[in-house]
Picture 1 (cartoon, rainbow, N blue to C red):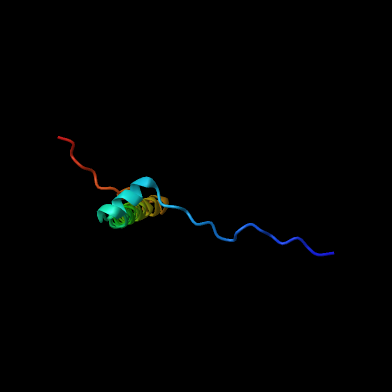
Picture 2: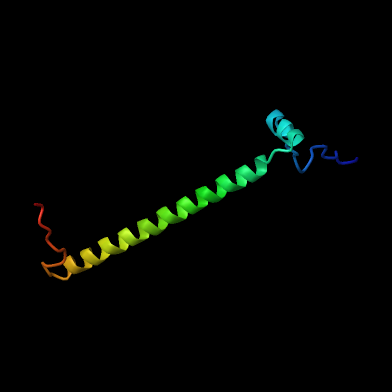
Length: 80
């Protein structure tokens, strides 16, 4: 008795959409646009992560100061 061969492909090749095909025929640069958009998103996420880390560090310093029993941890600002 022979084992049945698997006929399903290991890799699926995604065909280009109609828009991509027409852009390619026109000599467009859809992949360049996608790369630039991806780079901008990564840069924005990195910047937001950097800001978040610095805000959390500042809050942690204030919390450490308060937990040590001190009362002058946060400078009082005049609201006038």
